[in-house]
Length: 340
Image 1 (cartoon, helix red, strand yellow):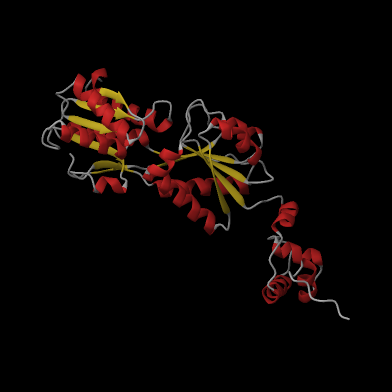
Image 2: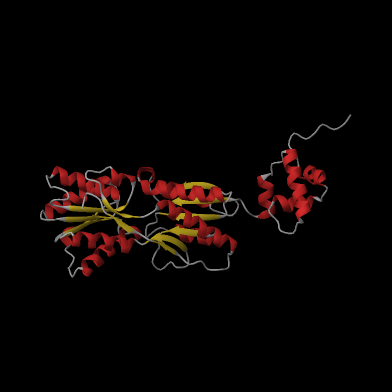
């Protein structure tokens, strides 16, 4: 009796059908260079005819690549799934990885209980590289990943960590533009609702606020500064705090659009006309900015482009692991709407 055909075509069958050796077939399947055009075509035709699907585990052993990239977000689920910024970054990363025929693994690092599980996954047997997002100053994740020898790109420039590739937006310039706009609108008492100051975005945007005041020849007033947490509720609480201390406030720069939406709600409840009595500017240019009342003036950034650039920088690092990659800072600009 003849031997029944294998239910799943093997590499040997592909090589036999193509009339080449097993090694040649393997090099074609794994993207090797030392293959003639004729042999490559024969192998590709054999793959199509047989319906061959590579064994990913075996391929990983041969190439030492998993074709998988981990995105680690060091934030709570509430923020990750509640803020448009994260959705935009993930969308950009997912699209760029798909175009490069790579898989995305999303890992959340907000809970201490996940630390052991996270460390066990972040190794070369599971992923080829790591993208990190929303880090706080005391986060040890970059050092732990670096110790494992994994290529890594960080979303957000961290002071003193030039050894890590990073992609960021020009947070400081964007905040300066926002404050300059408020000053040019004739606002004399410009407040700010900052983001968390243990994060690059929060700290850089606060520094931009101070620079904007300095450009206008003004001194910062501590009574006009309140710290938020990038949430709408945080923006509401900070705006109430500012109104209690400085009811004469006539301009507010919020470090993101969600907090600006919260500030608008509190100002409306307090009977303050926007923009007649108080002008408000946010940061992000999220879809939310078009649905606030009035529509929100804001600093535009593109989370989707940031995600794409993070992937591009990581792929450059994977392709040339011995060459240092320069960080990338993306531009921001002001979008003026009804709130100012």
